[in-house]
Length: 613
Image (cartoon, rainbow, N blue to C red; front, side):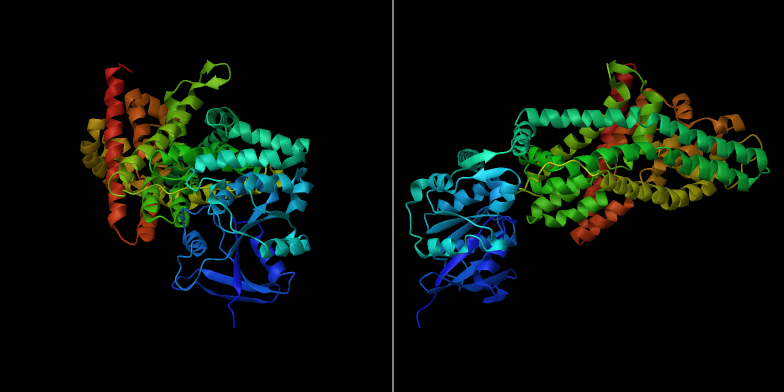
């Protein structure tokens, strides 16, 4: 019995290959694994118009023949006939999403350039037309040099025509497209082919295309991204101020109420100096957290965040990483823990390890209360330009500093301990859309609740424990309570180590409990100053006022520099140990981050002193 002829469906993920495969083969399918790998193999019988049956295989979605995942590796090896027991398909059917034509043409060019019998299925043309995009299949076929058949798999449109094209597909000269063109060249060619094949498009579709030309422009795109971030950090300070002041006033009123109605003693001190001064000093930054996440969620929902990832891919390629690392690093701006866990999507082990090691350098939301209290206390609230505040400018600078540091560290790692070639990256760009207010509100509530729950658990427990260590043993007459306490003695020992970088005993004391969570540094400082206060008026003073009176500007700037680098979060270290299956890399992370924190805090302090600040 003669062997059946073979054909394979290839294309990007989400091109509708599976729907087309099911429509062409019906129930005549079998599912197994490819020889020697765990990737699923789906094959079925396709009956041609002549009555001949051929075996049709649905290959895993791929963005290119330069494989970056097990699925893409299987697709590449099957197409090229390199998989044992799996001869190369005799006909390749490239499935394109008509509504995302330009993106899908990038991979199509690679397949067509092989010179093998190839047919293009222009799938989901109904969705493209719904969005106001009409494509000329003949013009597309002329540009690609292969037959192009419009299809709608879910409605079984174009299936007979596609089967007929598969039956007569022939070899072609491989010179129609140069097989070794670069990714950039293929993208430019895909853009030109897509423009030539479009017959008409609505104003809405043209607007989306114009927005992409603007936001993804190699020079204007990064400038727009930076300008948007600039607006975000200006808003974090200017919009949040009235709400933060109201919260601070409310917490101050509760403290005054407690002092007025509760008898003197340790229970009242625990409430006022520990809970309200410590936890309350963190809670007041809730408005800034909410505003920051409002912008992040809005950018994600609108489709802009994916464009930002595309722009960042160019930057990350320069340090040996790819856009695959962008999403985990972006997640790390909320918290490094989900960011590190998200590196599981990175198939290259060295890329993944590098991304894990630099994730803590992304400025997570836990740093915001630390940055905000120091900036509000030491950076004047004045305008640099109309509508441009100095405080927001400094906050943006800290975020940029963290990103630049992460890229430099990645460059060093990729040229040393994680040396290897950078992997390619292609991603789907979602359509632009207006964010739904209900979705934004839900997302903000969830993140606000996480912040408040953290303040009510980790920060509360650590603050109370610190208050106990600050209050025992009790000081004798004429002795400062902090100096007499257990915590004070520990801090005095640590102060010897951090004194050369401009830190005092109170800062040294705040660094220890802040290992539980970065925000605890703020509550620790507030509790320490409240316990060490000489009278109730000094206790009631805002933390920013106390810091401004006790710290120099070089010390404050050094403190900010420390928190750009320091891994002040044991949960991050724990998840790193789990994701790397050992303590080697978490220890490396701790050593290099604390080393950078110490060096840059010292450079900042002595540089500011030298400048006379």
